[in-house]
Amino acid sequence: MVDDEEAPNAAHRMRDQDAFVPIGSRVIYLRRRSATLRCAEFEGGAGLLALAAVIWHEMAHAEGLDEARAREREEALWEGFVLSGRVDSAAGLTYLGELRRRR
Image (cartoon, rainbow, N blue to C red; front, side, top):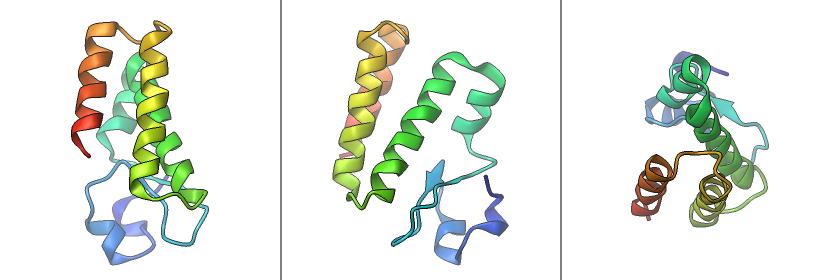
C-alpha cells in the first residue's frame, strides 16, 4: 500500500485509481486513500469483494495483459461473485453494469 506521495512516479501520483502496476513491473500498488480500500477495510462484505476484483484486474496487468483484457477478467470475477450469491444480486448487477460502462 502506498500514499500518493510514495507512488513510483508523478504519472501514478496524479491518477485517481484504486491500484496500479507500473509498466514493466509485477508489483501491485494499492492506494492507501482509495475509496475501495477504505470500504473493504471498514465495511467488509461487498466492499472486500470489490477490492479483490481490483487486485484481480491489476494481477492481469502484472501478467502483461492490456487494459481491455484486465477489465474482462475483473468483470468475470465480479459476475462470478454475483452468480454465486456472494454479493446481493441487485447491487452486484448494478456494479457490474458500471464496470462494463468503462469500455
